[in-house]
Image 1 (tube, rainbow, N blue to C red):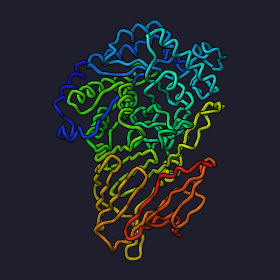
Image 2 (image 1 turned 30 degrees about the horizontal axis):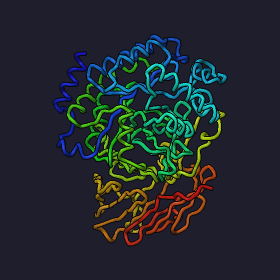
Image 3 (image 1 turned 60 degrees about the horizontal axis):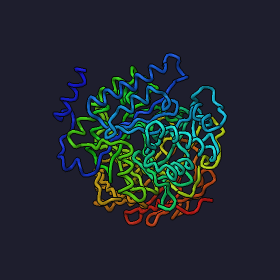
Image 4 (image 1 turned 180 degrees about the vertical axis):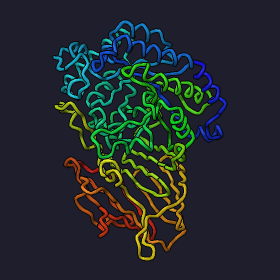
Length: 554
């Protein structure tokens, strides 16, 4: 405990953090939820007994109370029915601790709902058994009723927050309609990790999902489930995306305290919260700390003991808002009738790296730009369409894995191989030779509630200006009228691409039988002889892209 208190004192003194006026830091809310979810048992490892899992939660509670931290505990049904957890969590003050539901479905819950258990163990993590996707819509309602009845009989009220790695849209709508939940959460973006893929969605932050697709942000209030879905686990905004390229299972670089190079590393945690609190964020910034008890206290102790005093110090200085999930959900609903535009930026990477990044989300698309060694790459653009259903809303999962996707325009993960990273690169013809343009440090500025301006000074002279807005992206070169510049989409050989047609004013794509397009109101598309997938050429030094493709899916 001496080490914890020493860190807290240093952090309270401001050591290790960029100096920043309190006014500047408070421009956009920086919201942190500490969310710990609880399982009764862990069949994957006989050494992890029910008592080990319970003691892990006791330690989490103790350290959070030591630093007077607000947080949310989410109970899987088997843990909900265990008297030890009931007594522990009922003893917590309601004004600072929220008790909610963790929506993995163990044997006791399925049987209470009058259904047959098909799992290998009393808790089975496969998508067709342990999650709502494995049951018909009518069965999901019975499961929800069974959980809610038990929860209310124990705590005297219905939970306001229900979260899981993924929850189908039918269940979310039912929990809202009948039980008035106000917040949910799903897993960070990941490809193949633990057999579950959520790829191309609203990056980090929170969104209102489509009524027919829990992973897809809705574009209109009439088409959305009015429950904000917060993205879990606190992804590294630079490294998580590229982790595990050309492998079946993506690695994990997150705020989770069990990972020694990320949430369990003092230098990484300090860097993450420094960029989280100091760098520009549009409308608000969000991250989720905490850990599931299955990892056990021994594995998470170091990370918890680094993070909890730091979060307390930032809260005490007014640098973050520490809230329960319910509080964040209520705030989101009070402030946003539809999903807002948001951003997460990094202006200074970890020591030894010069990478910088910007993630921009709106209800229509997401975009990520990465700067490295003076170069520029748009490494991700995915479009959102509320009319595209996911199969799980009405159908039963038949596989032990689960996948959710959106519509790809640029995919720097799936279209890459090691040493051949896909993306839109800024190039120019200089003395008849094609060169990749380089520059200095980008500057990010929020102009209004939907617009992020990016200014990037080029080594060849001039400044690349980008305006990322809710439906459109504007790209313009100022200060150098003679530079013949363009953007080329480059991918690794053999990448499976969605494009069906490239015309001067529009590129068309098809993904999972759904058609979509991106149009240019200024500038033009072409297919160059250099091997690039397509080229985006400016008109009078300017490109204007429409990224709001919400026509009826076919």
